[in-house]
Length: 204
Length: 198
Image (cartoon, rainbow over all chains, first blue to last red; front, side):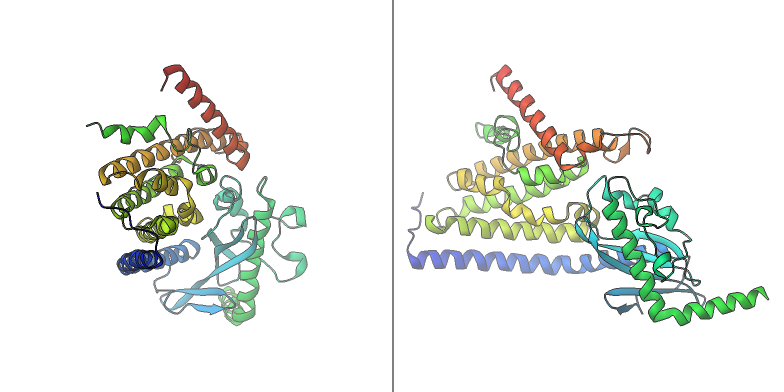
């Protein structure tokens, strides 16, 4: 067995330099190998989320997604007609900080479906926001920008049943949905108005 | 095969979680479900085996004054590798384990085994030790996760045992439940060890 290297300055620097260089090379290699699959996985996750919250569409919504104020808007169209808009929104008010939601709006501005993307809420409590029991009241919900009709939990004077022992999460969820709606209306209200008019025309 | 004892050492006699009481932070935090325990355990085992292997190989090249720095450097690199690989190939598991994968870097078991074992022993023994410790840790995490999942959520490996609306002991999913479960498991381990003189 060879003797251990002595702790002289040169030895220490050389040894650390060698280890860093080797490890950096290994990391670079793994990064290169996993870069593709990570992008594919992320893109798949994104499209899957859009698919979950919108009615059936036949375009690639990620292609012309728009990023406004930190929120991403994906428009789904079928045979050239807009079937809805999926908004990737977030809230900073979660029990463990930020979490991301994907909210799908129908052309008339009502909520189609919501899925939770990245979250770090308490398992078994806050994570119940993924379950239909909590989410179902949002489906078909007509949100309004008016303060009195904003989406809120019952405790705050709204209509949503908060999750037991996870009121903060429930509030944050509402906050994220409201944020998505407000920005959607602010930037794309004309699209909503147009389709509403068309819908009216159909009735006539 | 007298070297085999280095492998079995970590399973029961010196189980990292129940006997050495190392790596408690991830153990308390991620064991809300049995599956998380397995994922976390597998990631830790990989890092443990790789870092033990490399440190045992390089032990004569690392001057003792900078050994901790060198160990952390090696461990952190392997953890980043696990992190990237999990992100690429098991995105769902990666999502549930989240921050606790990068935190394997500061897991005491890994640095502890590097310092106490790998830098003094041969490569084969270090690998066996890493495997044993890693599997022992995985088993411990899975048992803890299983108990907490059954009592707190009424399911095991995501298979529901009771109906969705049944009342479960929520406390066990919450942080205090982790401490309770952990305490009882250590007590049971101690009495078992005493009884059979392990």
